[in-house]
Image (cartoon, rainbow, N blue to C red; front, side):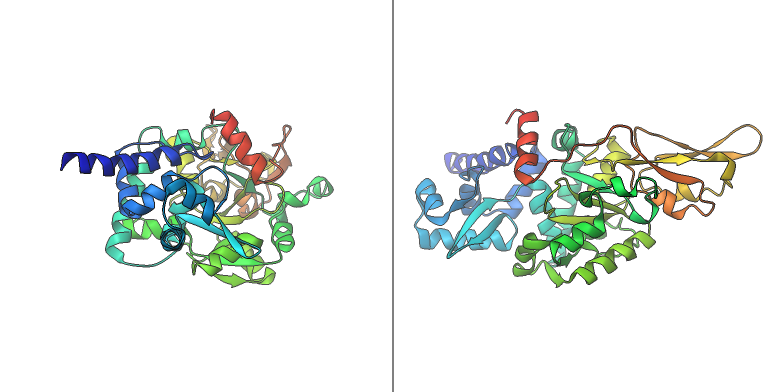
Length: 368
């Protein structure tokens, strides 16, 4: 019996090895193995372990796995329905890609409702995994980040507005996408199963353009027009949420609207000082002579980058941690006295042109 158990474990370990080699990565530990055992059947784990780094056709996967195409199609369809595989239509066929951990099957797991007990167990496992020693640092602690931060456009200074390119503006990204889908915030949904969710709305994450077609086809979100998406953007800005976007210039696939208490990325900053998002190309400049010491900026900052400090004369003033600030602009938008002005950073981030460049950079930095 022992050799049968060992053979099964070898299949799941091979899958873990494959996932660990994606550009995003998935460090292998007991928590990851527990997640994989609950998400993948043994057949799915075997198929997943055989995927290459590029999209493959059904017949190619069949030749690698030795599984008959008709049987393999059933397995792949099941994996796609669970968000473990992306099936991409091209002409009269599909190409298949293995979904990474992040952004990938973590989000797809919690973009849906389902059996409460199962989702609660998975929420606990993912929570433990992402807080395991070194996991977020291995996924995010490199030069090229998974995401980038978008500034609130209403507070971009007029003096530099003409310098701000379309890829830096959430409204332009949405307009150029032609529409997309509105999905459940995976992080906030996961937090609800842990009893730690805040009261921010759940249905505010956006998938864009062609990427949204898969989301809608799999029942993970509802189709949305440009106007629908712009309304969500405005709503989340009123609530002081942070806009995080796919870290590419051309055709980003998503915009998330994040809080510091539930979001995996912002919690990574707050709890582990690990940044999975690039800052925007802006940073607050504080005009102390206009400050009224109300503390709104400190309250609104989702990553605790602003602290009120007593100057010794009974007056508290905001002090910015420049290394921590990601330039979202939520503080400046909420400031009642206008004493926070968003200034262009002296060194600008160079954003990858597209997903291919982003993943190539990430893979190179991680030696993959």
